[in-house]
Image (cartoon, rainbow, N blue to C red; front, side, top):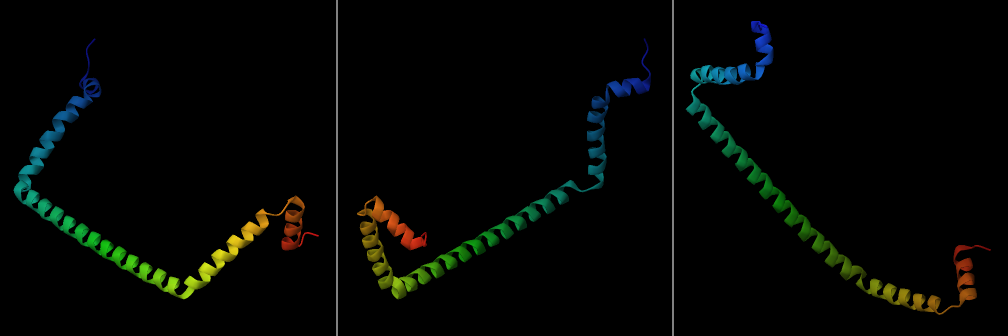
Amino acid sequence: MKLSFLDWCRVNWKFLLGVAIPIALILVGKRINIKQAWKQAKEDKEKEIEIINKANQGQVNSIKDAVSDYQEDVKEAEEVYGEQTEILAVTTKKERVRISELDAEGATDELNDRFDLD
């Protein structure tokens, strides 16, 4: 059985592709100055790294500003509402103790009064 050229190409297409790619790269490489392309790629990569570093520094500064603003807001809120928060905590604790001491009937009555269930 004799293979035709096209049949041989269909069977050995990987070999042909493996030979064609390096030949194409060599031909294209001779037209383009590889050192110049390599230098340009290196410069572009350095610019990219510089831009990423600037963006990262900007993000870090923004986070620091946001944290300091948050801390100032919390401090102001504690100054303004600190006493009321303590009063609320004491009232809540007293209410919990009062409700926990109720028996089943008293708890049911408390729920009925609170949610208008009658």
